Image (cartoon, rainbow, N blue to C red; front, side, top):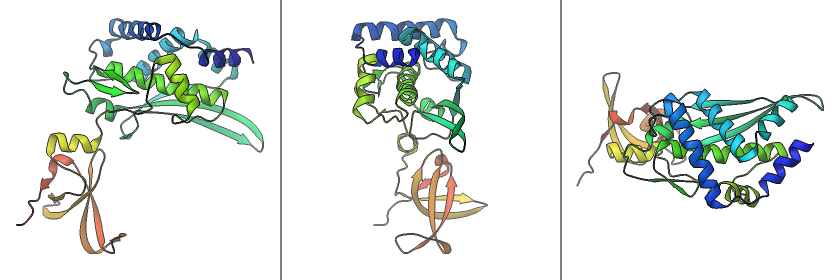
Amino acid sequence: MELLQSIKSRTQQVCPLHQTKKKSAQIYWILRNETQEFRSANFRKIHESNLAHLFELYDAHFFDNEITRLLRSLKQPLSFRLSGKMTRSGGTTTREEIWQGKKLLDRKYEIAISTTLMFQTFKDTHKTVNVTGIDCIDRLQALQRIMEHEIIHLVEMMIWYHSDCFRKRFQSITGRLFGHTESTHELTTGDERAFQEFGIRVGQQVSFVHGGKKFRGFVNRITKRATVLVATSRGELFSDGKRYSRFYVPVQNLIPEKKSA
């Protein structure tokens, strides 16, 4: 298919870094000037329609709208989702297929962005945050880097079916098109926020009140809330041979326990 081959050809081209920066800056200022939510670069709210607009701008500036045209010609829709449950990944791109025997009936794609990580980061407006190997000064720049990353996942899924951001092909494409040097981010995760704001770490002994009763245990995991394990004879058996009950507690409700001398 002509469109498919054209997109593949674009992934093999080298975009000079100054051109990449110019295009990305153009997209940045279009969003700042035309989108209410992005009037502030450290935006406090975002809608799925904003993600669609961001994608459309990248498709226009870097792919001459060929990704959208190909999706429409194949009748394979692309949707966008904001996720408050993604606590490690800045974004994900997924493909859903419906088969009847060996016949493919439907195929659709989705790009999801983590609002949890986005809004936990850039509270200190004087600190840069590295995303895909590029230092970002605000949330909008970080969102651009994540969208660039996810667009290449989408392109790989459409052309080669499989996509892996730690493989050479993916990294060479993102490097040539967008100047990425990494496939990782330094957005603030739940455990980092817990330590920065409340001094709570995984493995720490804590106490908390639940149902009017005080409990003591240790922090096993931190996402949006802390998972605290409390020793009890009727609890779940863990690999250390002990039984614990799980409690899911807002980090701000935990009290660090002092170690006895």
